[in-house]
Each structure stands twice: as structure tokens, then as C-alpha cells.
Length: 450
Image (cartoon, rainbow, N blue to C red; front, top):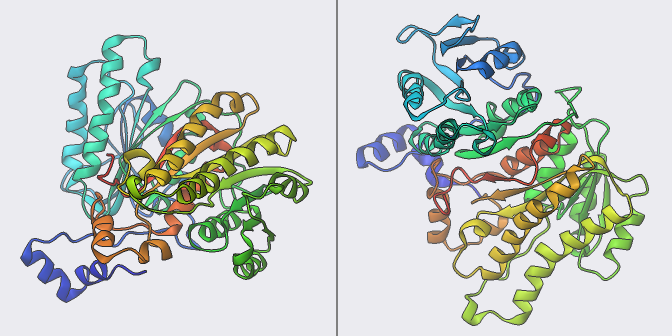
């Protein structure tokens, strides 16, 4: 469903009216389009400590224009306030900040640059995991980066985003993959996020098709977010197997034919679902995306056992049982990537969704609980918590609730299925094993649960 307010607010007439009334004017977000070659379409400015120099060595693969500002030992052309071009991307390495006094470098770097950002700019702050820093004062400084980056993301305008990446020792080699996602339009609806990168031996061989040769299964794939995930994984080179329930068979078959994949019509709650799934995967699996989910909303006082049980069965129990069956039977290859589609409702809760929120919080717990064990096989498991996404389901919401869902985020609008799909495609890459047991929110920095 289209966002009419967003379209009107960015029209010639609407812009004047909205500005005169002091109403919010969400920016039209720039998203990834077919044929685009580089992650950053415009100047990239680097600054800060030693990781900035490492980013400089790969920056030419990200963009055609690289500048330095307040950086240590950078070789690129300096960006000069008042003279430099509008900035499309910023990377500041704060990993060297060793005490609270050093935090002033954050203000000294960002303050002159923020008024020179191009529309839909992307910012990444780099740090070291506070829990891994031996010096207590340095650990405090690194922990301070989280509050800074989340606040910065809320202050940005014109569709800009900001993230914090804590880079563990030995994880520096995976910076390129993370920056290709977070500095590009692929992360258009991701902002205010904090992720930790861990060492990972796997590498992407071809950035134009990073999933080439990988076999992917997507549940709930017939339409909406599931269909967008299937399309995006196929775009990136994966061989896709699409799964959905019998009533969605016609849509599922058509999508599979268009993507050159295969369709599997299956109720994931059926007693023999695991056996049917294993039979359809004789060659195993590299990418597993648990997207299938349902809602049955009622306040807890009015919640029926049928509503409660159905949501927990589809959203939480089925992913656990099917994943366990795949693991027990060796159907998940080494270095496989598992993504569970959670929700911000599982983080913040939501009135009338105690069953749904419990199921989505359970998926987050599943990722965190299984991550250490799966890491021994090189397998990563993460959750993507989506916010308000423009789908048939949200289109059926009452208008007041729908508008509230759209506006209650730093980006002031709903996301698109493509936004969730791009995040899952990144987490499915070989090098994204650097992220494990974590939650990536695709919610425009929703104020709920922030």
C-alpha cells in the first residue's frame, strides 16, 4: 500500500504546505536499483583512528571519491569545510578513543560535516567491543559510542542513517562486506543499529553475485516480505527453494518459475513437515530463512487458546523443529547462514499481540541460544526484527494505527519488503558469519523499544 502523505509531502505543492504548517516531511529514501555498480554514489569521508586507514585501502571499491577529515595518517585528499562537495557517506573510527576526554573527537569530527551531507547519506562509526577492552577507562569510552550513535541517528535529516559497528580483534577483514551494506541504499531503512563483528574466515569472492553457488530456502515465500527475500537472494546468485502453504500454491509456483527456482508446497506445522522438507533437500542447504509467520491479535483477556497456539506453532515452534531436523540430518552445510524473521514487537511488546510478541522474542532467544554451538561448524544464526513494513497485512490496519506506525520512527515512514530482504541477503553472505547471535532491526529506528 502506498504512503500518500509521503508522496504529497514531497510534491511541489505539498512541500510548501507541510513546511508552512510545521508538519514532518519524511524524505523519499534512495534504495538499491538494478545495474548499480558501487555501494556509494558520491564522496566518502574518512576520519579517526587506525581502522580508518584500513578502510582507506578498500575505499576505491566502494566509491570514486574518497576524502579524509581529522584522520590519522590518511593519504586521501583532505575534505575542507566550506569547499568540499556534499558528502554521501561518512566513516569515523573511534576505536582509539581511550577515555571520556577523548570523546570530544566525536564532536570535532561530525559537527562540521553534518550540514554538508547529501540526501540519504549513510554514516558508520567504528569501535571496539567494550567487553573486550582491558582498560576500564577505554571500555567506558567505547560503551559511550552506543549512546552517541543512536542519538546521532535520531538527529539526522533528509533520509540519512547512522550505525555503530564494534569490530572485534581479527574481524577487520570483514569490514568491507559490512560497509558495502551499511553505506549503500541497501540499508535505506536501517538506522541507529549496533552490531558486533567477530572473526570469520569465509569471504565473498564476487561482489556482483555474493551468493553464487549457494542453495537457499525461504519459508512463507509466496508474497510480501517472503517474495522480496526470494527475489533478492536470487538476484545475488542463490539457487532458491520457495516454501509456502497449499492455499498459496499458485502464487508460489509462479514466483519460483520467474526466479528459476523450485517451489515446495508444505504446511510447516504438519506432523511430517520435517520429513517432507528433508526429502526436498537431497543436496543440503547453505541459507535458511524462516520468514513464515501469522498474527491472531487479541488482548490477553480475550485471547482464545486457538489464537495463542496457532501463532506460537507457526512463528516459533516450527522454526525450532525444522532447523533442528536439518541440523540432526546434516542438511545444513558448514558455514551455513540462518536468519529468523523477528519483529520490533518482540523487543518492545505491542498491545493485543502478546502471542505474536512472545513468538518473535522467542526467535531472538533462539538465535542467541544456538549461536555459540553453531559457530563451531562455521554456521551463523541471527534475527532480523522488522518494524512497520508496507505489506498487505499493514494495509489492512485501521488508518490511525497505520499512520502511527509509519510516523513513529526517525525516518518518519514505513519500510518496504525490499528493505527486509536486503538485510537478510547481507546476513546470508559468506563473510557475514562475522555477525552471529545478534538482532538487526529494519525499522527506520522505530521509537517503539528504542
